[in-house]
Length: 255
Image (cartoon, rainbow, N blue to C red):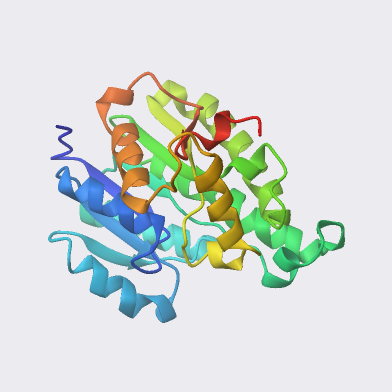
């Protein structure tokens, strides 16, 4: 059994009980980690804090990762409260609905910028804040999707963002390796999260995934949480710069 007692983890991206961030938080908490859980804004605060109450010892923090001043304020608060960090989970992605639903060729300049800023640059920004607090090394992880590699109809500009995110993981892994900080991505299969509802034909995507995956089903949040627990632990001490697929094997199929 993995034991994270004495470890502190910060989890970005909690929106509601369907969030992958929530599945990860539950697994880290069950393993004994002290949790700092971040939600985006006041609108999401009430539901997020209701969930956080179910994890004794966990604390909630508001942080919009598209705003540098909020990131700076968050890490100042984390440093004051915890002193150091061991794990960071980046479960954040966003693109404007108009750009997700339009044909890819009609992606707007502003929509492209927002998707890359929120979904990719934010990993760099929060990793920079966390790295200063990971004085004993640490594990940083983010969430990707198979559309980073292959065309998934309707994933559109978010697919390009995920491709950028996976490249960012590799560069951060190289950049932070000398500090014994590992950086990896989990490529999860489709899950009905708040963010995923912005993808057109999500139901069709999930049905196709279940039909074609070797395990003939879809993945759930707690299974992604199990992979995150592994990456947070010393069992993954030599793994960095990787994309770990948690998709019931869908990615190995040719057709």
